[in-house]
Image 1 (tube, rainbow, N blue to C red):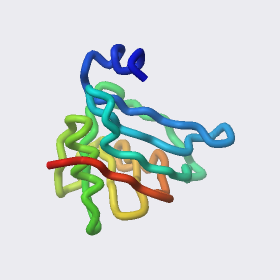
Image 2 (tube, rainbow, N blue to C red):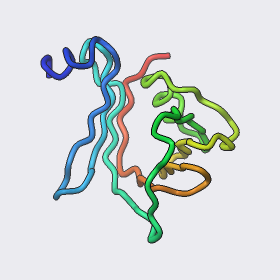
Image 3 (cartoon, one colour):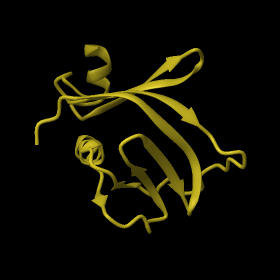
Length: 121
């Protein structure tokens, strides 16, 4: 882990894990290697999947529901958290589903199967 953290230059690190050849988990670590957030998930992709053309546009985080997941992800990755999903590139997070939106088109969904948060605000 220390080798990977070194490559992150003491910034937050976002790691996606694999389960049977598909994304199955994601974890966010701080610069010291402390796991701030760990999610086990299933990827749900729409039939008309399109690729993103906004590679240089940083996404914003939009939180819905009661969990603090949106704030944790935004804070951990230093992304802007907003209430309005009108940004061309946003990640809409509720208690069980995370939608990745680009130009008002759903790229894919993550269904949260389990969640562990060790984030201190």
